[in-house]
Image 1: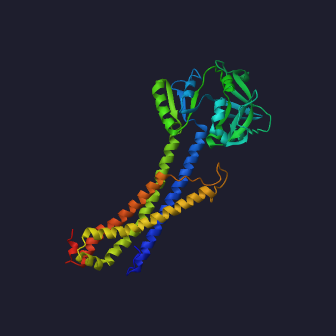
Image 2: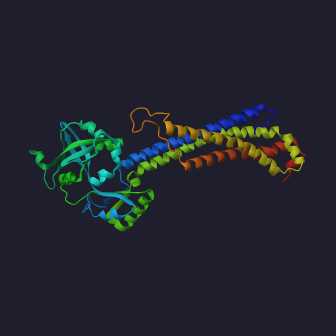
Image 3: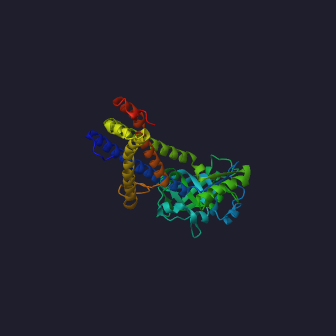
Length: 403
């Protein structure tokens, strides 16, 4: 590949091809790793709020017994199981009002939820002694003007069961609960703008529930445990219950992220194909330049397949050199970003630097793509140019007929 050639332009084109492939490979490594970082970040934020497995009634809004699934606590695959009461309620804080999704939770949720790592103010708790407290999303807290340093109560309202609405005395138709803001979390814009965590007893009192719950949430120890337990529960609980994993809860999101990753990979792969066209051109010129040398080799007994292999390896080495240097450079940049945070994210975000996650499977796919494109780019000119060029220059040479 580095041998001196009569036409120096071939060296220049080969060098440009290697550099182009190196840059393309480096771009693939960096872009895919940054995408993986954002992908993992998005999943961790949704996982902070959503459970691994959720059990809901197939018909209706509530499960009759909130603690009917406590037996799952004995399962080694389960790290936490707890009932939840979730419903839309009307909130009032001072003179500000809003409609929000109330989520009634117990002490198990508060102790095990990753949401506590996304607290931006106050305390992550729903009780202070006997005082009922709430943890609100940042968007909802801003809408209501909530400040956890103040002692103003947060009022929750919900229509009473079997009570007709009275326009003359509307408050008589509503059940209300007084609660005090304790903390504010910020995990994802949609959740932040809608949700408020309250004690499950306060939620039950507001809705008039006794033993009911709207859902059972389960957190598992591993991804394998999640899949096996979800499959098992789906089979044992039957059609009266819906068993949803965290991927099914956000099915559209995860499908969209996978599709985006594939599109990004294909676009960068297409750029690599265009860059590899330089290999095709330089190798075609090299074959034409080395007509005399190949004829000499043929005269010495070299078979056509051997000479073809020499040219294919010559072209493929350009791609291999570009792949090696590009892969190394890309991994170094990713490591530097992970270790030192060289590039920061603009504005206010949950992380300050661009997240990066290098995945071994992605590196294997990139390797296969780059070397595969490189091999095709080397093989095509040898197959199409080789025989025609040599036979035209040396019509009587054995090169044209050797097997």
